[in-house]
Length: 127
Image (cartoon, rainbow, N blue to C red):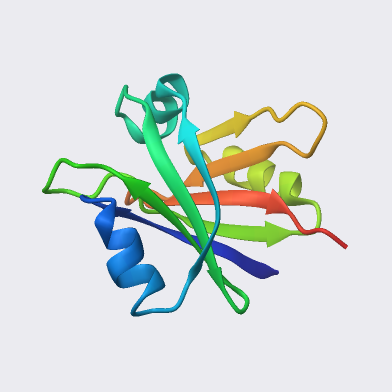
């Protein structure tokens, strides 16, 4: 198993540069806009969200720009496994909440939740 990334949310895009780049020395690898439908399905917020993926050494951060202060909405742990679907179906069999994100042309992404509501994103470990 390998830790893929940790997801966090920030309230202001300036924090990307001022804290994550300048202080923690992460570099921006890609930025994308999360579709409102995906945001609603997985995080309960029906709005488009700017997402920044940053790296330093072997550590990945997926930072969600969400201007509303208060409870954080997007935290999750992303783990890579060989045969990630096995972990997914094991969780489903045990009655955990599960979702699948179909990714045409590449491996699907699996999501599982523990009973406390913590979300885990499961990806296929690349050889």
